Image (cartoon, rainbow, N blue to C red; front, side, top):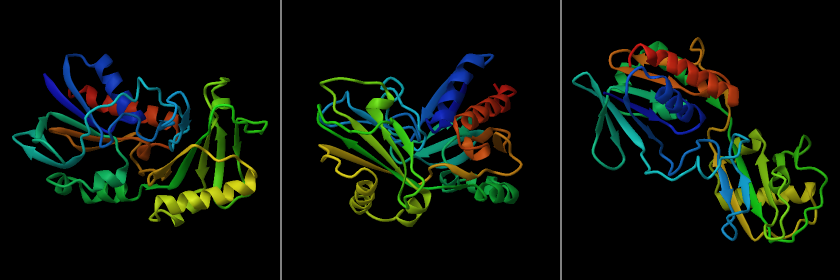
Length: 288
C-alpha cells in the first residue's frame, strides 16, 4: 500500500486528500500534516473566549471554517525531506522521521523553499527560479467580540473600505450569518490593506491592534468597547504572482514522486485552490 503525505491542510491540501481517497485505483495510506494545530490553512474562524457561539472569520480567505472541518489534530511541522532507498524520509520538529512513497506540498511556496535535506539539491535551478518568483501580499485581521445585547448600528453586513490607508474590509459577522440572538453578542472582522500589512509586518501585535483601532474610530465612530479581541497576522495572505509555466502544480521529482500544489501555482481564490487540487490529482494518478 502506497504511503502518501500531503503537507498543508488548507483548501488545496484538504481537497487533494478527499479526491485521492475517492479516486485512487487501489487503497493508499494517506496522511495530512500541518504546522498549525488544526485544519483550514488561510481559513480561520475564531470564537469568543466568553461565548463559543460568537465567531468571527479572521482568515486571509473570506470563508467560514466549520468546527467539524477545523477539528484539532497533532501539530506536524515538516523540517527536512531526504531520499532514503527510493522513498522519502520526512523529518518533523518533534518525533521520529517517517517514510512515504509520495509527497504533495501545498503550503505557501516560501515555506517550501525553507525545507532542508536532499530536497534542496533535488530542485533544479529553473524550478527554484520559478518558485522564487511566487509572491504574496501580507495583511492583518482583527476580530472584535461584544457582549450580548450590544448594538452595532450600521445597515450592512460587510463593506469594502476604499478611502482608508489601514482598513480595507469590515464584516459584521453575526449579520453575515443572519444570527439574531439575545444570548450571542455581535462580532466584527476588520481586514487591513496590503500596504499597511507590509509596512507593519514585523511590528508587535499589540501595536498593530492599537493602530487598527484608531483608524476604525474614523470609520465607525463611537463603537462600544469589545469584551475580547483577536488579532491575526497573515504573512502569506493572497498570491500576487503565481509560478510561471506551472499551471496547477509543479513536479519536483518523479521517482519517488514529489509534487507542489496550491494557489501559488494558479491564482488566489477558491477556484484557484480547486484547480490546483485537480491538477495534483492528475499528476498522482499514474503513480498510485
